Image 1 (spheres, rainbow, N blue to C red):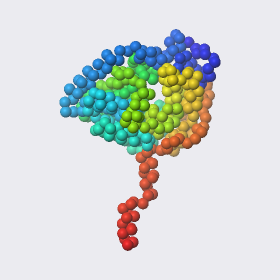
Image 2: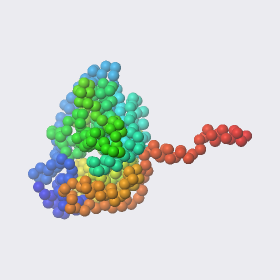
Image 3: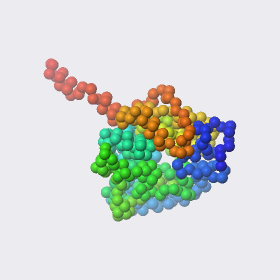
Image 4: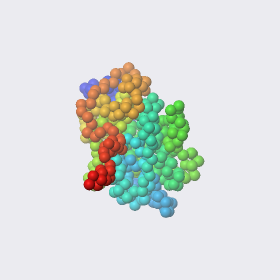
Length: 410
């Protein structure tokens, strides 16, 4: 069914949007019913009729069984970035259900200052044992360049790493259960609570985000040895350990707005200014979030502001018209993170746009996507926080040398 509401100026003319929210037909896997209502809106309706008390009982059973089977081992693996979802996950597991998880972080090596703080704050507040893997910056830069042409965004190493590293830890430490946060039925538009499109398994993140395996990313500049950290455990290793995963959002009522407000007020979690959207909490740990969302816009005609506006429209916080105006303001803005990306990859801006033009989906091939310049610098520096620290101290005199020199002068 076509979107016949001609009184509304849509972000991209020539494509269909859900008649109820802001989801476009170009969202992967989205479907519209005979009324023109999208999967995500229907899922939102389903959510209101679910017996969440019954689902929470199922969650208690799963977690209690995990604790019993764990013995003296960790009860579960908690993949954590320090972002709003994993921070809330840590609260639920440790404070409500009394589990002892092993926190596991795949670092994209693009941590923002705010994200670095939030991760450390999470580890301290919830007294978490923690394992982190950080790929070398040079490798990240190579992968970011290869990723653009391979999957149409800059972030293959993160999509792949957040799936592979927790599974590697689970198999090597014999911890079967992994606990994730938001359900894929929540905001995605590709699934509903009654009809999930992907069950968590070994290949979950390859299917939903990474797209290509480590083997498929290898080339003359990226050896199999370089890509070894991104390899998934074998099916035999997964089966021998009995690894499986759950999303808390499938068992408890998930409200990211209220949860974010709560962890901010109770635990001191911090938001920051995010490129490409009007909210400051989604992917706050990463300086390249705006870059990821901009490539999505260039491929599919929407970015982060579309996702968030659609949710706010469904929740009655915005009108559909207000959502569309925010989308045009933010999704279509060239991010400052693009400058950093061009620097680390050596690509020209022309080459970047040429690659993304080739990645544009068929429904948008004949549509010129509007892009406008950013009006002011981002409040937080679009440079990895670790690099900021190094730059700050690289040419600063060592205080011990200055102290010793002072003694010598005397």
